[in-house]
Length: 300
Image (cartoon, helix red, strand yellow):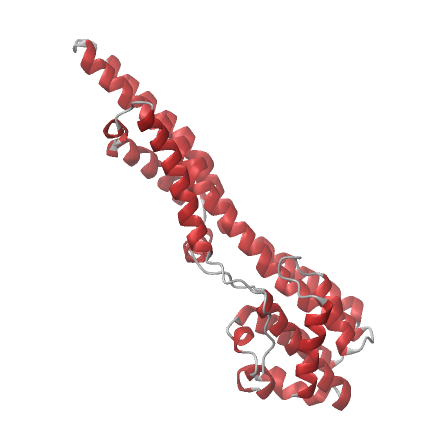
């Protein structure tokens, strides 16, 4: 029986992204229409070609193949549902308690088989949410394996964990920086599109005033689209990726604190309580919820 939290809310983050983008578009284009503007004047595919194509070219030119691949792989995460919920954290702490309690009772060697083959372990099998996250499983089993080996003290293990978590965070920031830079470049490319439109207008001074006004309006749309795309759409997506990165890092920090507490001699129940304290308040289970969760693991 796995621990569950009755207060968990299954919020779909992709819906928040969709709603937010609709609010941005509705406010901008709706306000323009209410002011008497003609929406058809804003449809300038050539301006979009200049801005989007230039931003894409700058992205390819300004990032290594590794960074481009990491960015493309990170894009689906933007529309993914919440991954690290309270229920998942409680499963994590229950799994850690199971492992540490068994190691404390029967010795560290008793969990060697579980650590070496987590996907065939009876203990890990009780927590499919954790098994589905290969990064978490690898991080946990790597340090449990070092604990079983007994060759590192608490200080050395803590330093190694800190370095790995920092590396994980730095690697996860690569797509965030790539998308942020693209968002920052779009207003500038919008100005480029506007300047090119003005140049085209100045080269057509012989046209009637009504046609010249249309050309000037088309040129100004370039600036408008660059700012809207950069700050209204692409920039917020980078912010979402950054927040998801923080959540995945917090998962590793929870494991780190729990394992280090165990190494320093604390009982498994107290070690997972230390791990609970590092979680964000929005996902952190209460002391009673964690105690009930640990009791279930103890009685299983």
